[in-house]
Image 1 (cartoon, rainbow, N blue to C red):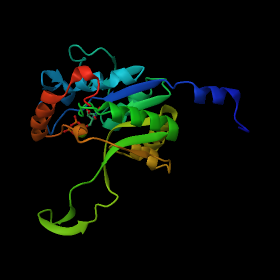
Image 2: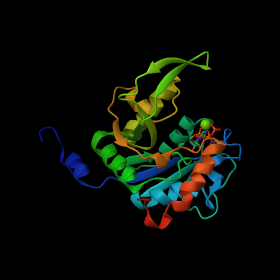
Image 3: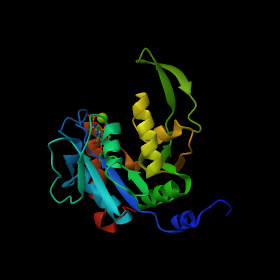
Image 4: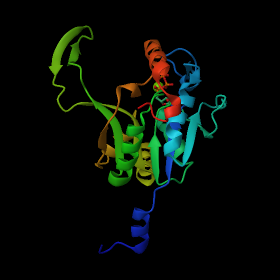
Length: 236
Ligand code: CTP
Ligand code: MG
């Protein structure tokens, strides 16, 4: 314990404050139904579903919304105005909380199993950064001319990255600020941490954590919503 202060020991032993940060400020261009977070499946917006799954496991929920839009009916959380990119929306959320641990989760992934939330949150505190991800199951091929089979890519060791992603807030804020000052753009937050050479734990995700991106995904989401038990706080 040499070099460790009493305050640091107390911080390690006490329960960290956890915030769920939900970027929901996108325009949903590929889906074509307006801002995606407000699109409903099984009678509930994607945002309401994400909030309901996360709320039991965190101390606060914060959402980034498109400028000029208000929270959908029945969603009671703190909201901030998002930015022009996902990265800018997450940075606005990070600046609006003092939590020790943040769980970043796309509003467009409305089905979060409890196990994944718990494991990502625990690993975020222990390791510093963690993300849900799934080992790739399909054969992977690099296309030739964008139309033909080109080079086979071995899938061994490849994971498809999902959210939630969990971090010690101070580390992620520092990573965002350094990416910003260097003009580095990323589609997710774990990538910003890995880029600085810091460890990111991979937590086995879940097929139900797919992102609603195109109209075909909406049909799949309707099917999952029909069997998803919102009252079980988990979908397990
Ligand atoms: N997002 C955000 N702020 C932005 C862009 C995206 O908060 N400026 C959020 C979206 O609301 C979504 C998540 O980031 O929850 C993942 O983004 P994506 O699936 O690309 O959603 P959209 O950007 O809305 O969709 P599209 O790219 O088809 O327009
Ligand atoms: Mg987008």
